[in-house]
Every structure is written in C-alpha cells, then in structure tokens.
Length: 149
Image (cartoon, rainbow, N blue to C red; front, side, top):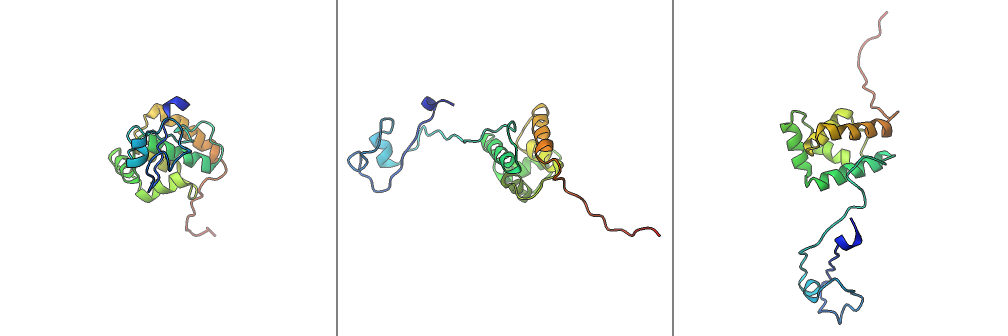
C-alpha cells in the first residue's frame, strides 16, 4: 500500500477546529477533526498476512493475526468456521495461535487456516513456514504406561 492510499483521521476530544490543532496538516478536514467522522479511514497492519519471512514463533503468530484481520474474522468466527469445515478448534486455541502462547500443534494451524477460509494451495506455505519456525519445538506427548519386565 502506498502512502497515498492511507488516510489518517485524528480524533481529539474537546478540539474546536484548526485553531486548537495547528499541527494538523492537509488531508484532515475540519469536519473530520470536529465531529470524529472516520469515513474513509483505512487501517494498515505493519505485519503482512503472509507467512513468508516469519522467523520466530512471535512473528508467525503476528502473521496469523494479520491473516485473521485481513479475512475479517473474529476469534469466534474462526472457531465456528473451523468446526463447520470438520476440523474444530476452540476459541481459546485460536487466541493461543495469534498470541504465541505455547507451542501449537500442526492440526490446530490447519483448523485455524480453514476457519479463516484459506484455500488448500495457500495452506501449504503456512504449513511449510510453521515447520521451519517450530522445528525442534514440537509438543511431546507423554504417555502413561508401564515398562515391561
């Protein structure tokens, strides 16, 4: 996105116009500054909704959050859509994925991607990056059992 495509809206409570806000440059109308209109406001995340370039679990989770935001999904909608796709995950699991809380399972990532509506061909990039980022951090399942004599 170029600088021309991003508009910034400044909301200042109690401001009466440009005389109270001399630092306002061009691009913000008096009406915007006085009434708080946010029509035309474009937000842009600094993190792309793409796995390429993620090198740490935190960076990977930031990109998952950006994907969720770009697809206009909430925690609940991702969980619901993943269930509808046949790979249910909880709202808490979705939250853990986008906040880098713990080491996620690969199956949880697949369910998250399905919940976000990511097509299978695009899921491969996410899974490849996941495998690279989480190499050596795999969750080890502990099994309870007796040792043989």
